[in-house]
Length: 175
Image 1 (tube, rainbow, N blue to C red):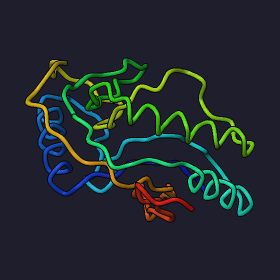
Image 2 (image 1 turned 90 degrees about the horizontal axis):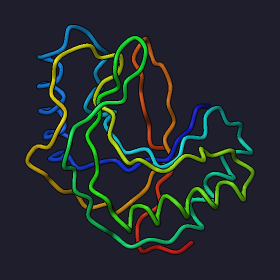
Image 3 (image 1 turned 135 degrees about the horizontal axis):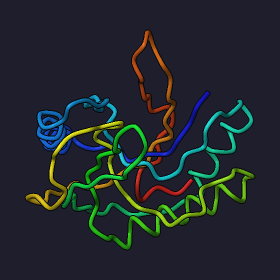
Image 4 (image 1 turned 180 degrees about the vertical axis):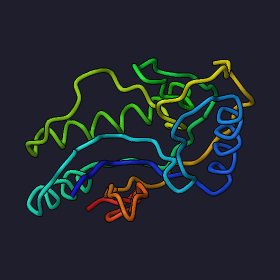
């Protein structure tokens, strides 16, 4: 099974992200745009895992400690790639988020997972392979409270990319 760790958002935040997605999509010639239920902030990508690795991933998350904190979504941008850009909504620099991601990554490495070594660039993917004229930049910032981290399973169900939370760690709870 294909796994990753994510922060999922409230319905209100998803609605605001969908509005941004729709603005980008309306100005695009083509692209693959994320469904509402797939909008999330990835903390760590694990890839294909077996049952033993699944257990290790859960244990690594259990070992992480964090309190609820607020993130601010404050800009749109893109990563240029061949075949179209990846458009995203960006998160304002946030010490609590960076600490959470760093501790989770360290625990996963200790458990034997290979985690990206490049700097963490927190973003929410809006669309992939997008070609269009949407202008990068800022918009009216909005916030959401992070109160949990979820271990997500990614699968293709009847041609639809589907993310399902299979394990959750609540903020403020020690295992």
